[in-house]
Image (tube, rainbow, N blue to C red; front, side, top):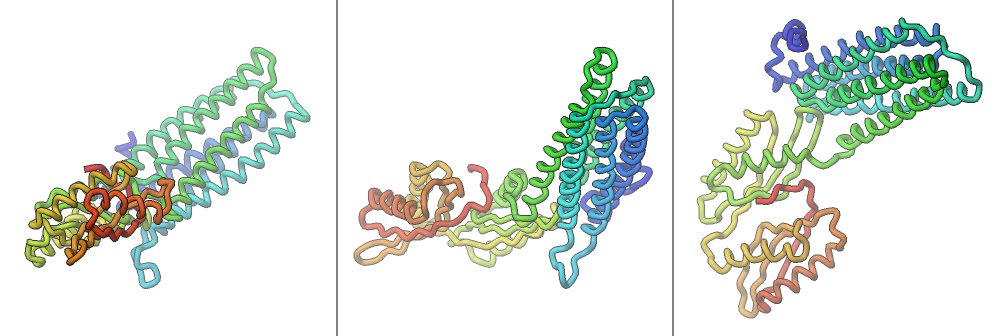
Length: 393
């Protein structure tokens, strides 16, 4: 059914690399969510008001917040799909993250209000009118939410949208909270324990917990969170598949919205190979990323001397030995400059953020390590930050 709906309303849905198609799929998902959540909200608030159940009303208001979320997400997809212009040369993709942040804040506000009303009912309790119509409405609501979970999950994976995947998780959570409300109603009716107000508190706390998680998930890409490990691994694999590339380092991935990734990386090439030949290889790799992945990747060429056996031996030794300080450390751009009294060895070392050691302390440890290897070597090391965690070769 989901694929049929997608084919009916977005006929060209297979072309997900096309930003316009991606926008249409996102907008379609938002429209479906609005319709479903408005119907669920109206049904629950009506039955909750008749029964005098604060937990059912709370669950209905939660659906109202979901509908508001869908509206904001729909506009977010529309705005994110605008092409780049003079004022926004990297496009408008981060509108999708901004819309998610607005939704998260809205969910937090609703959660606080529902918590207040539930606590008030605990203080001044009132009986809940049970009916089988109430049970039927809640069962249908659970079924609809489970379908919406599958719907948003499928479309989210199709266009690689964290917003829709998060919406799918929210639909799953809604199905769980509605099930809890239904169980509370049945227990209250058949066993005489009034759990309605307490279940309202539970639903409100659940909403707050979801809102806090959404705030975290939407703020991270806006602040510049770490790159997706799968993206990092894909970039490394694609570059290293080309003959003439010895290694890569200093990879930086910039996220300007779903489907709008920009990256820069240094690629090591043999210094003995003519520079025009190596440059042609680098150009081909950049064109492949743009053609196959829609990703702008800028590759800086770093020549590495491979014909000098002394330099090559040291390069392999330092790459392995530096891990005795910390297994996460890596080196690159290893160069040797012989002199009359000593040999300068120069290289960069990538220091993980979690390493409990200052750059000065790390430099001193590396210099001691190299001095033990050869006292005539004068170590000049530059400490780099680890913007991405490249997979181990």
